[in-house]
Length: 358
Ligand code: ASP
Image 1: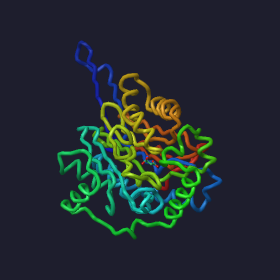
Image 2 (image 1 turned 180 degrees about the vertical axis):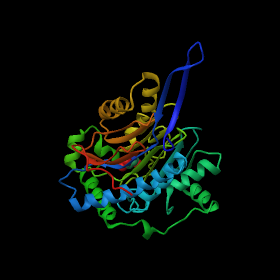
Image 3 (image 1 turned 90 degrees about the horizontal axis):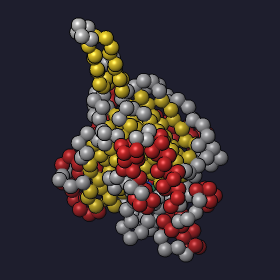
Image 4 (image 1 turned 180 degrees about the horizontal axis):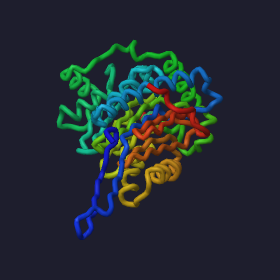
């Protein structure tokens, strides 16, 4: 019982005051993460690569789960989990983030507390080691929700947030990918990276090699029944003109509300902004009484799909139900619940397996 959060405990009494029925709803604590959606198939991911990703996802999940296990808050769990993913060069967040058109890493992140509906976010920041920590600091120590660019960096300095030089964020993989995208855009003479994808089916995008995986996100439900969600990204490769995606926008890429669920999204942000995807999932649960699974299916496969968008999302509802969905060929994802249920998966077809025991 100590590992379980119990809500509500309803005792019904008969006329002679003897309990006649006890209904106990047991809600597990739980954590779910993603590491981005995109063109992820067994064919373009060697077994060795899969092992590398599995290891980091395991480590991140274990970090957040331990926070929850020890009675910590979901906000703490989300921030610590995302920090592990930001510190890995495998993902498009923190170290290893994508480059914009100027060859710079400009990072976006957000975090939201489902109990208080407080939120913090940063957009277009450079040289911040852990943007998710900065987003949480915005939530905790400023009266604002979203800070951007140089202003956000000044705020980071004042709050003793760790900076790193450009070399820390650099990976050859992302430098090569920038060259590839720039070449493709030159060839297609397109004005914006988003327009590359406009109107094209996910199937076609898969064939075009849309490889935008790597944004990271996490949703957690703690022992007190409080939800939190967070997302961190470098955005889209070769982004221009101060482009900001959905990840730092509360309601688009991230949302948490104890009344419904927590959500973190990944994909081409423009579509998630236009559909207010994360908040839409919460609304569908609240006003249409859809399950988390049904709500996410509606948003990903109807609303985003109809606009020609691609991506995916993870959801954890206030009863501890986990759901995930995507219209790409894969999405890095994993979850663990205090009931013992867990899964780690990359592709559409089947799960990669169970999580490693700590
Ligand atoms: N959603 C992110 C953005 O548009 C990118 C991603 O999830 O891969 O900035």
